[in-house]
Every structure is written in structure tokens, then in C-alpha cells.
Length: 279
Image 1 (tube, helix red, strand yellow):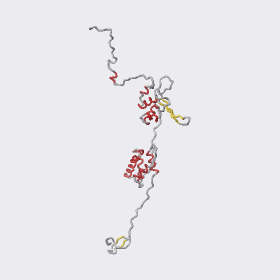
Image 2 (cartoon, one colour):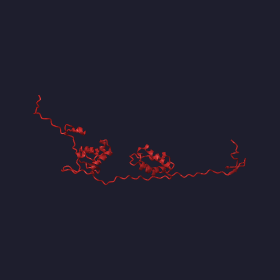
Image 3 (tube, helix red, strand yellow):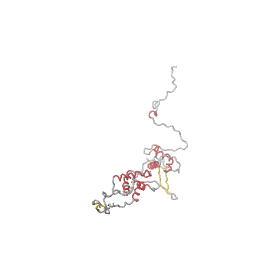
Image 4 (spheres, one colour):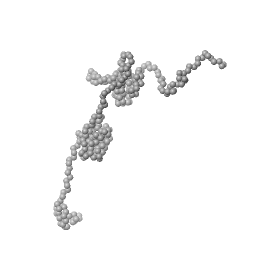
């Protein structure tokens, strides 16, 4: 019973001494099934790209999975995904920078301008080429960011007292309560405050200035509400109020009181107030 069976092979030793590599690292493990239909081949140069954002990588995979002729404009993609037009437009620019998309404006036979989009699953190569593909290089651009347009000039008050400027700022701050599109920045408000103060100097109440700036606004979106307000403050500036001189009180000639003979002023002779009979 104590004889060892020498025909049985000894158990094979593990390459990692019986310790699980995945348990040490805590990383990902794969449970893969081979696809036989409805799949898209994606290169690791895209899936593991070090410069593209996660949104751009996912969007590139989605576009590569679409059939030819599918719409991939910003509006169509925004209707499909919840990220919104701004983020989707930024991801498309990333893919275009690194060569995964090419976009060109073309004119059809009917004279309409359309955008042609070409999806590249391996930037730097076209179908039928052999050999290694060059590393994608971002396109350099010398375009400067658009400069912020200067707001139109506004009227200036004659006496810009602190109270007047404070009231004018309150008028501008309250415009958004009537129309949320009239929300302006602190910089724009600083530019517009003198114009509102010039209106207040013309004997207008803050409520009247508020109505003048918010009545009959256009229905379309206001891309630069501060520019619209500056235009109204200038073109609809009311005239200065008429100059009013205070007439001095009428001075009656001196009269001598018929009773006490004291001098007093009155239009006609008679008695002074002290001697006048009580009524």
C-alpha cells in the first residue's frame, strides 16, 4: 500500500507559482465570443489613442459602423446621442484633426451646398495600399481665435453721480427678469451703464427705461443682447427736458397801514395783517 505509482505524471507547475496574475493586478479580464455577423473591425490606434477624448473615440467607432450614405452631420448625431451639439461638434473636430474624418463642402448639380464626410479607419492610408501607415499628425493651423466685437458706443450722462450710476446698473440687472435673453455679463453692463444713466437724466423713471429696452424685442434668439441694448440706448435716446426757469415771487409795493401806519407790502392800500379784523 505504500508503493508509489511511477506511471502517473507529476502535476505541472504553474508559470506564476500557482498565483493568479489577475488577482494580483486587479485589472480587466476578457470574456470574448467571436463575432460572425454585424461587427466592425476597429484598430487599437483608435481605441487606445492617447490624444483623442473618450467622446471622440466612441463617435469614431459609431461612424465607422454606419453604412455608406448614413447621415453624420451634427444635427443627426445630436438627435441620436445625449451629448448635445457643442460636444459632438468638438469631437468631430478632434477626429478631423487626427485624420479619422475628412469633410469637404461640395455643390450639387441643383446648386445646393452639401458636406461630404469621409470616415478613415486608418489615417494616412486609403483602400488598397500596402505597407505600414505613417503615424497620424495633427494638422497645424495658423488661424487665430475670433476677436470679440466691440460694442457700439452709448450716450454719456452730463453728471455721472454714484447714485445715478447705481440706479442705472439696477435697471440693467433687472432686464433678465422680463426676458431671460437679456442676461448680460458684468463687462457688458459696465459699458452700458452710462447710456442708461443718460436716459435717467432726461427725467425718465427706471421703470420707463426698463420698458423702452424690453418692448418689441425680436422673436429670434439674441446672440449679442448687449449690442441690441447699446443700439436702443443710442437710437431711441429721448430729448433733454425743456429748460425751466423759476419765476421769482411777485413783490407788491409798500403800503402804509391805515390803522397803525406801519409799512407792509400789498397790492392795494389797506390794513396790515396785525390790524386786519379776524374773520
